[in-house]
Length: 466
Image 1 (cartoon, rainbow, N blue to C red):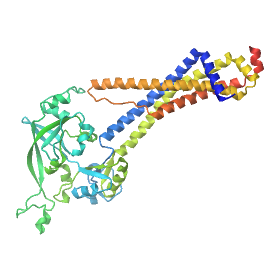
Image 2: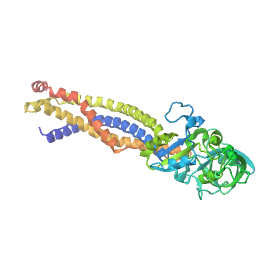
Image 3: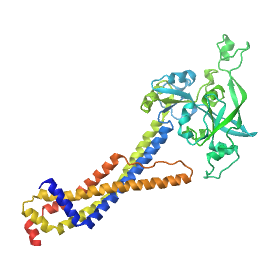
């Protein structure tokens, strides 16, 4: 028999028992729908996490740290020079790192705890300097007000929790019903006064600063000396945002943000100054945020920084574990989604076995007029494949609809909780084609026993049975 004749006969046979075959096909569709819905949810969550990380600028950022930092002493075994001989993470080191291939900029991490006064009320908080390049960071999405007018403007952006503190609002634990717009309205354009300790090189007896080149023993004795001078700076509130752009810092998250150039010009005394005072009056940095042109260059830049004698960390290190987690999650979701398809395969076996019992005379006549065992097997395989194809296509459509409904309901819930909408599911083309192909394969495997049983049927016994 020709392939066209086999397919035509299979379709005709499926139409004769339309109700039973439709129920079997619906069972396949439900199984494929559960598989598609679960896998699309896992893929959507993974892409949501990746989009957030990419938009936050973490994927193309390497954090360079000083190996003399006390926080790094937990890991004693590492490559590089001894900690006491490691270089200082100062301005010359920053410039060298910025000149590495693929590096766009290397910004120092300037953050310190200080007092900020508003309406003559003191507030102790963490202040951080941020470069203008973070303007499009997702932390500033939905920000009320505007960004800094220039890289050294005496302006500040407040984090939402600190804005509530300035206004004397104390939301109950777990509640976050105050919108940023309500907080920003009474604060934008107002001024705060920041009191801080300035690190200043002391003047030499002849009136010059010890930061310059001096000769003599006195200069050598004071080469590492500096003085701390109390200062204050009036700052204008220009914006209120929700998150710290470097929100992975945990307890070190800032609540007040200054332009990075302004923060550098203030020469604020930091904890790293106490740690590295042996390097002289020039300040050192606790860490640098090194932005790379292409995320694929992050490992090379990270390794180059380590060879210079500094510590280095990138989100790529953490995303390896995240990718492994989502891979395991997708496997489990696929397994649970396939259980319904396995149940549907039993329905296929039952439907085709019943078809053998009902069509014994037809099979006997086919074999009596010259149909081979392969022709009979091909007929039942065609029927199983047709049910698999129809069930797979319907299951993909049903799974896509379920995913849309889940995403719609989730966004309604997020909106009520004052969170931005999110796309938590995604159905790529490979999942559509793979689900249909998997449905056809499962259907063909389910048709193995009925097809073999039909092929072994003796035509004489089949006609006698009738």
